[in-house]
Image (cartoon, rainbow, N blue to C red; front, side, top):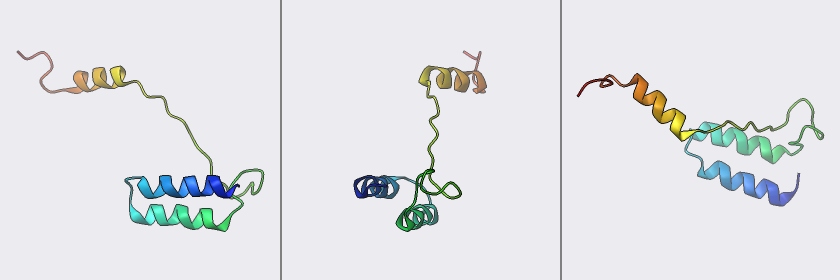
Length: 71
């Protein structure tokens, strides 16, 4: 993995609002190198993309609201 990509990942990890032990684990893993599946099929980083639909979330929250239907 390129040094530029590793530096970018490190910045993202440090900016993330998660527990410090999780950040440290990711930073430690990145520092070991061989982070892609081609480089290391057993232990590599991967990414998942989740859809985000703010309108659907708002509708779901409204449906679950205890005030629904009250005026």
